[in-house]
Length: 222
Image: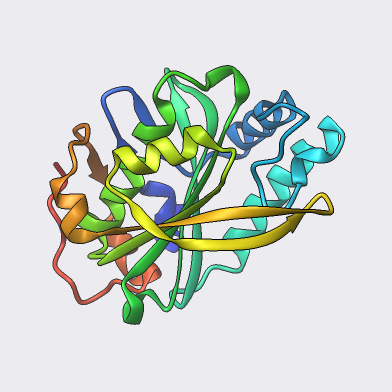
């Protein structure tokens, strides 16, 4: 069975209303269609790489190819987990967790996107809380980082509510214009003080070596 060779397909994170896991091929196609239907207003760009500027068919194809790419290049030293976010059984977006040399740094970085029609419902906070639980309670991370442009008030608000603190700024070029990214950092100590929904994990023990987290004890799943 596939799970015997790629145990990540058995990893599940559940919150009071969401499920996060790797999508099947059909679910990946549905996820691509969510992205093609729109993630943000055309007048703004929340991503460093403006992949959503392409026509809808190309946006959908990019989602599929990127998921395949990150699975194919996975190693314990450098990985990105792109979890599909399901609300009432339907894919609504992606929540990612990534790290380089996690066994040494114990640091992860989060990123996400959510279909425009599903925004403004608190889903963004709940899905980020889920992967932070995976990182801190499951993998033994010590710190988590994130970033958002100055005009991305929703993302910055989610980070603030989850306990992140400012970690400086970065100037980048997007669509040929300068933008300011606000870097944010969450320590284990601050995460432990943050109110969050109940989150359950399943299938993690078999995946620890793939995250470079082997050697630690299996975490609680509550």
